[in-house]
Length: 281
Image (cartoon, rainbow, N blue to C red):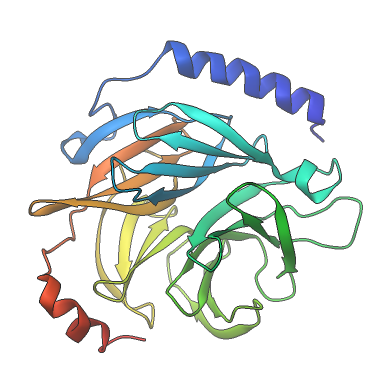
């Protein structure tokens, strides 16, 4: 069992490495370099949850690291700052495994939701969702172990939450994380997930087949394309520039963030968005 001291020592070493060695744009190594726009080392030791935020400029990233259980803010050039240690926020020193992260715009403040696939070692709570402010303060905790074993990815579609179980099922949940629907997926180990409000489609990382999948609201497969490396995990839809759009990915085999071209993206006219959304939940 890892101790907090060992974790933080490991994080410090890995963060030093990340500052000294940043790969050039397009570095991948799986034969799909053409899709990679940029890549750089993630802070921490096991990058998983990721969320790109449009701030009117280049945007920035929230990142949940599994090894340290720390939530970071990261610029699109790789500079980072610690937002919070989830274990400290929770008020204990348990072994946590932060896996997924999503941001939900809310009033008066945006909220962050972080999944924990390990849970608390000293209390009977596994597979936990932490609700945090964007200042890193704990708002609430939800246990989902009774239906979503080994929770990984999380996203929000504007109304409901969507959770991934590493065992191959996606769940649609209400705001209290009570399950509304379940979708067992064949040949799929779902990790990260994100929602595209322009089309009503979901982007899902399938670690089993090492690819990014595009699925509809019934989790039917619409399309897919290869991941940039060997152990993809987190995913977040990024910025549209001209006729293309980027995705942000994490990979636990390379400890990198990847900015990649969305191979499924088709430009959508602003005036047609409303009509498109009415076709989906």
